[in-house]
Length: 464
Ligand SMILES: Cc1cc2nc3c(=O)[nH]c(=O)nc-3n(C[C@H](O)[C@H](O)[C@H](O)COP(=O)(O)OP(=O)(O)OC[C@H]3O[C@@H](n4cnc5c(N)ncnc54)[C@H](O)[C@@H]3O)c2cc1C
Image (tube, rainbow, N blue to C red; front, side, top):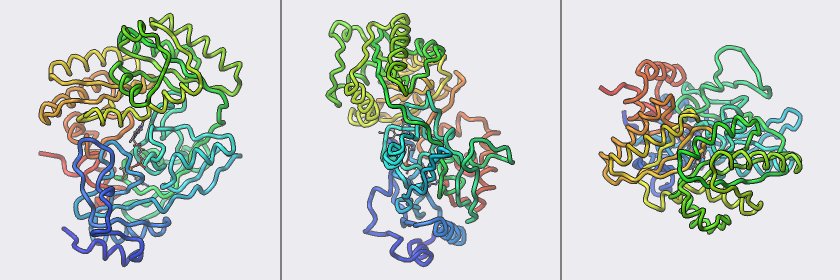
């Protein structure tokens, strides 16, 4: 059924000041940052200001069968917030208040439109930190929850789902539920907090999140270690984790990616030319501590360990150079995009399987006559591969082979970016059909009219 007056129906529910449609609609509402998904403008965008308004929007959408797609800051990399043709976008930009920073229970309670940057400022003021930091600080917490965002600090703190203690959410029926609370444990029925986290807006609209906070460390240091090849870098990761030092970040970059971010960030890392000439891969470690003497001990221990694991040299970067390297690494996506990458995937494998997986990546890329470069969260086994192959058929087959190889290593199709619309055909082809059937039944339980972000992660009807 195609509803012709979506904007009119929504304006009747919330008032015309809270709905945009037609020529006033910015093209931004038709896409996120995914490289390989066609943009689609919605019939209307609605801007609710509170939970009751979100519930009202869902109720009229159910009544009129209007597909709804939640939108945070649209920094996602899987096309998950691209709306359905003829549907509406629910934008959370007006629900952008930090409701509480509870220093006694170490939690923040936020509306979904709060950005990471906003929360970081507020927590810094009380020497606490919300530790999940995917590379884009304009991302919203609602989007982080819905994608189960990861990022560079996950090796120490875990990903978003390890920080979400409770949610308020509007189901696809229009009912409002509250899950969890300001505590870390609950064994009280099915864990709906965890089911909604990572569901990419397909099960419920998140209207409030209770998030875990930690003490903010005052001291940090960055270690850079060039290696002769990628194999040696990835093989160094398990012993670093096993050391017990507990680094904040364990990142790898291949030579192509390092050269690109050094150029775009105008970095001078102090690596000597003879070492540069023979380095094909780099390890970056960031350490943090509450006391400077303890940080110094950790730096010494890890620097010695890394040297013994085959590093060509070990550099402890001055504070400013370290910060600039991490900022440039966060922008690796933009650098790859500017270099003309045709697609980006973020396979995760067990960290000890990374050397074997990366050898397969090189072999598959060579066989498909394609160029694959990358970097990633090596401590988590999460590799971000930029695929340079303009022919869509060759590229599609290569991506499928790369994902299948990750699954064969005991991994998963996406470590943190999600499936959205970009990877759903690979999920349909490679995932267990029994699991997909269960996902469909779960979706139907939350969203019986199938109006919440339809066509993301999987199609409701199995393809023939
Ligand atoms: C340069 C760059 C670097 C990045 N680095 C990382 C990284 O290291 N790690 C990582 O994990 N990600 C990374 N990302 C991806 C992105 O930042 C994350 O996916 C982020 O969580 C998206 O947040 P958003 O607010 O932009 O969500 P959007 O893109 O707006 O939406 C993402 C999904 O969340 C849903 N959604 C949004 N709000 C709600 C809500 N209130 N209720 C229900 N569903 C909702 C949408 O429907 C969609 O399915 C990067 C992106 C860029 C551009």
